Image (cartoon, rainbow, N blue to C red; front, side, top):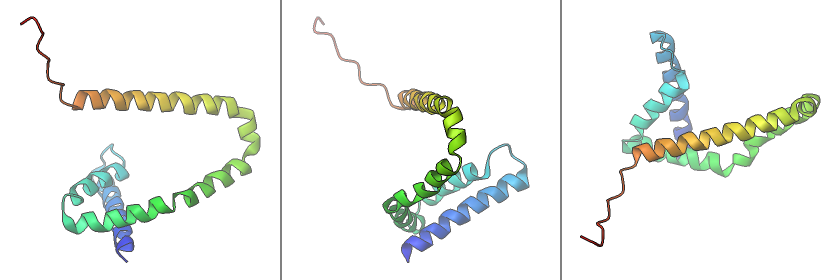
Length: 121
């Protein structure tokens, strides 16, 4: 029951983010605003436990979430065979770019390591 409460919180926060984005006409997607609201909700115990239970449930059933993707690939097999190499290149390059940006942001946000004193003095 806690997982369902957490899932309800996730959906409610996403819907609230969509509503805020629509009402304020911000150029920020609603799910991003909802993620910010989730970040605030996770600071409190009433939000942390249900969302953790929902996350655990979703992670334990993660393989089921790949079924629609597999069906979509089989359905559009002609497109995959026509553009497969370009898709593969795009996936590899975008993954590398995402990892590089993540590493640069992590490097910028982590505190600098303490400087070691030289042995000479």
